[in-house]
Structures are given as structure tokens and as C-alpha cells.
Length: 240
Ligand SMILES: C[S@@+](CC[C@H](N)C(=O)[O-])C[C@H]1O[C@@H](n2cnc3c(N)ncnc32)[C@H](O)[C@@H]1O
Image (cartoon, rainbow, N blue to C red; front, side, top):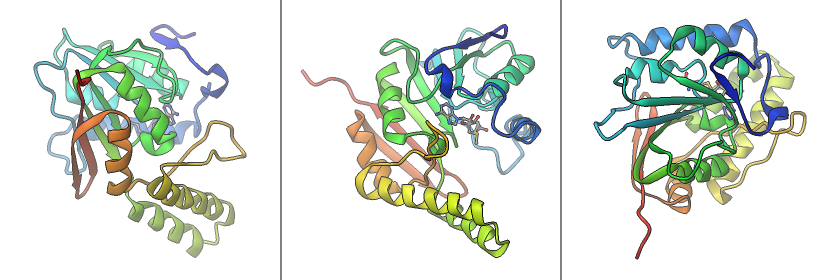
């Protein structure tokens, strides 16, 4: 285990070297540069409030969103990712984030451990329903979520790009992503990619979000569809 990276959960499903080597690391560094540049139009960050004393980023990569959000030093900032090499890069970038290797569908934290849970373009790679249930479990009642998701148009564009370039394997994979988005929208269900245990990917719709979030205990759902597909919601308090 690397210093500052705590490994937990389904060890077999946590990638030791990452999925794409240098390309993936370049992605995280590029996103960090965007996160650190308030003038960059691609930048999208959660609004931190004074009550957010314990923040969890699910699918944090190298911690770029947490780093760019610049929480106060007394705030506990925890980043979870299944890609060990991304977390290792994160430990080289900052001391302000506690990095934990785990899957979003199986978070190694107690109930109600966090005030705010964020997840930026990472839920699309998870079993969305299971991850939302876990996020709800580790969030305190009244705590908030901030999610950035993948719209249908993105997957369609990727599929079209595969087709015009005759990228057969990538096209089949993208068709599977498309199917998962449709079944997530209609039935709240997704299928694992059979060639890689534990691998999920889908696009999301506002309809799916409005059905899945209340089922996981969230209310006051707000959806913004513009340059980014952003969802915020609050964990409901237990009824007495
Ligand atoms: C597109 S990157 C986003 C990284 C970062 N949140 C950002 O905004 O740049 C998606 C991240 O989700 C992670 N991821 C994918 N599936 C995951 C899972 N089941 N559990 C935890 N992390 C996962 C990947 O390793 C990757 O770092």
C-alpha cells in the first residue's frame, strides 16, 4: 500500500495500474489545471458552505475537484477512487486530501460520516443505483450532494465518431453504454460489461435522476442542463 492511500473494499476490482496509463494521468492533470483556473469556461465546481466540514469526492481521480474547490484547512476532504494510480498521483499533488482506494458502490465509511458528497463525471462509470444508495448511507440527514453526469448526447456523439472511423470494438462498447443509459432511464437498471467484472457505464437522463434520487432518500432535487449536466439534492430527514 502506498503512503496516504488507504485500500479498502473489493480489492480485486480496484485497478492497481489504472485503466489507461499515461493518458489517464494526463487527463487528471489537465482537469486539475482547469479546476485551478477560475477563468476557464470548462471549470465546474461545487459551492462549498460553512456547514460542509466533512466532504467526500466519489470517483475523485487525483483529487482535482477537491483541490480546485480549496476547502478550508480544518475541513476533512476525502477522495475515493478505484484507480490506485490516480490516487497515487493525488498524494503527490496535495496533502490536503485523504485518498482511499475503494469503489463507489461499496464505500468504506460509517453511516452519516459526511456533510457533502460530490462526484464529478464519475457516477457514469458506476452502478448508479448502488452508488447513490451508498452515497446516501454515508451522508448525514440534511447533507447535500453535487453530481456532474453524462447526457445522452455525449454517448451518441462518441458512438457516431466510432462508426465513421469504423472502430468496431469501440462501437460495440458504446452501443452497450447506450443500452445501459436507456435501461437506466426506463427501469433504473444497468448491466455489467461481461468482459470486465465490475465495469459499468451509462449515460444519465433527468428522468432517471428524478426516479433514482428519491429512491435513495434524496429530496429537493435540482437539475441544470447546460454546458454541464449538474444535479444537486439534499438527503431527507427520517420521518417521525
Ligand atoms: C472521468 S474520471 C473523473 C475524475 C474526477 N472526478 C474529475 O472530475 O476529473 C472518472 C473517475 O471515476 C473513477 N471510477 C470509475 N469507476 C469507479 C468505481 N466503481 N468506483 C470508484 N471510482 C470509479 C475512475 O477511476 C476515474 O478516476
